Amino acid sequence: MAIFFLQICPHHGVEISNPDYRDASTKENDVYIEGVAEVIKSHFPGVKPEPSIVETCIYSVSYP
Image (cartoon, rainbow, N blue to C red; front, side):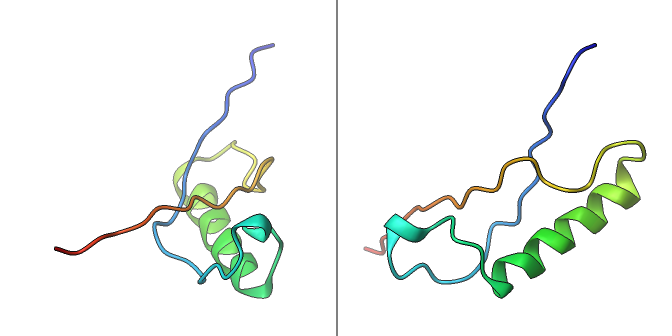
């Protein structure tokens, strides 16, 4: 049996005040997780909509 992972994520979210706790569960993050689950349910029938792994990406934007 083959196992495949599907990565779907919003490119916005809550402000992270401490990078050591970037993956901590919060109510704000839960809203985004629920939204992604709804997209998976509607566009990918048969795929488990609950995440197996939740990670927050950190990147910076610099302005000239």
